[in-house]
Image (cartoon, rainbow, N blue to C red; front, side, top):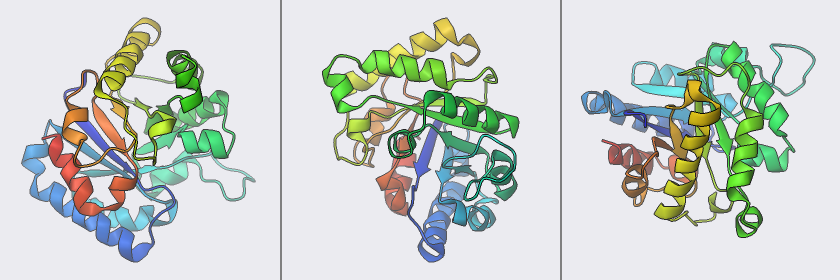
Length: 253
């Protein structure tokens, strides 16, 4: 429903200074060169490892590229060794934070309640949260895909949601890093379901960006971005290739 597509790249635990800066510069140069074409059509977001955020901020600041954190702690500060607050990430140059990614939910055991707290922390710091939801293969095969996504959305969105500070990313877990991509029919059906849920239960963000994530590549980006209620993509592996990610951005123009 959003007119401007959001093209987001989640680098996960990948990238050292040399290759990360080179990749970011490639993307930033592309964005700068195509700034007039991007205007009103596409926003670009990169979520690198936290170790690279400050350095990438220097590279991307002159360009139309936003930076995001991959996770945050709910508290502003404290005795939480190894964690980063939303305020710290904003201070490093972030405008967005990804919350509730399936890898955080599965590997780190994050509950919907914790995701909600992290999303609220992102809002507290004045940033936009990209809240991830999605079902596993077992849940889909059991006919529980919509039920799972509805529960995740309902319990992962805090009272702090406002128009402009929350994005929903639908990532079917079985399609992340597997090479499998949901069919166009599957994507449109779930995104339509999410849109209807927001309109009925969370009207303040009813028109927010709905992103699709799950083995998005340059070759399939245009088709995915043309789907009803798909307002952008959250890209994993393909965002680690600067040219491939630029191809995905170009598909939105």
